[in-house]
Image (cartoon, rainbow, N blue to C red):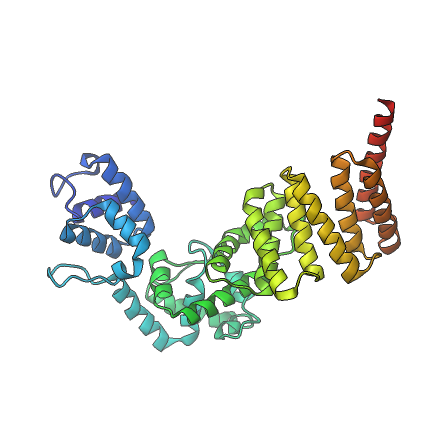
Length: 388
């Protein structure tokens, strides 16, 4: 159902048009605007629009009231059925539950696939999340990894009840938002947490390490990864998989200059690593360093400097003064001093970092060459200051 058709259907069902057969342009502009929001929230599902319109008409309420109620009492509305009128539609939740029960009877693995999809961004779910990301899950979903026929059968079962659609050309799945809502609302807290953990683990398995050549892959998985980041926050997921995923997603956003989106993900990843690994672990230092780099890019130089120093201290203790990661922290701190025109401090740190890189990585390694270029830039700036 198109949006205009759905909006007109909702307004007619709610008896908010001057005449039963009135057209959309005869409705009040504010009613049309709010009806469009409701259409979007309900994913355009005709049954849900019918139920919404019937509720508004029966209770003599308004579109804004229904929209606010849906956002705060979604489960109650989707389960609502009136005993006062005979033509009130069956609740959306009831219709979905009947389909869920039939799926569960036919295929446990199909039911688990539906539960997994309930926690993902609904419009284009890459099949790789299912076929590659589930290999290590303690769930029937791991069977998809080795046998594509199992996935085909599960999708066929779900498709028979219109619970999932498959785009064979793009190798993606889609699920209706209301199906997701009803399924998640029906779960106990422990079950929601379990499936949240599964989704995080699956995304962490497929989201690639961030470098220029993987940018396209990162962008492909980004909508799902950002949905996963919301789940991590909402369900308070504190696993190392969650930290790893958040760190990679933030790194990609950072690389693409989407700094404000990256910051809360870096912060959350750091919090998880501090809690799970402690403040002196190398992975914690990596998160500290990444956040410092972001702050430096945002011009928050003093905040960045403190974090660069903290990362360096951790790495010197945990990895030793000759480790390449220690050199990385030295080079970042040197760059920070360089930008603040603290040239002598920057020079000392650049020279220490260069010595480590040359010994550990070799003089022709890309990291060594890049650092040497920064050092040369510092020397030029120092000469220019003398000339002035």
